[in-house]
Image (cartoon, rainbow, N blue to C red; front, side):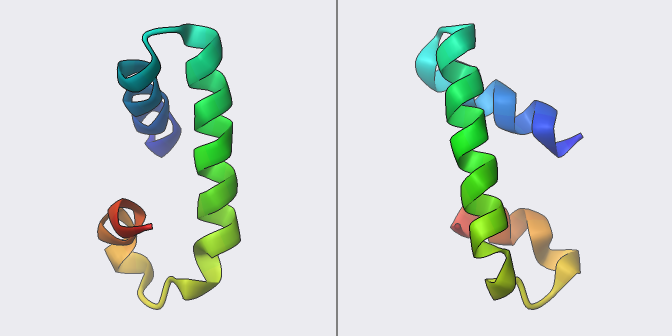
Length: 51
C-alpha cells in the first residue's frame, strides 16, 4: 500500500515514529493538494516522486 511506503520513507528521514507520522501526513496533504496536476493515473508513482 502506498501509505506504508510513504511512512517508511518518512521514518528513514526522521528516525522517530512520531515525527514520521507527522511527515507522512504532510506528504499525503501535498499529494492531495497537487492531485489536479495528475494527468495520467497510470503514471501515479512517477508523478508522486516528481511532486
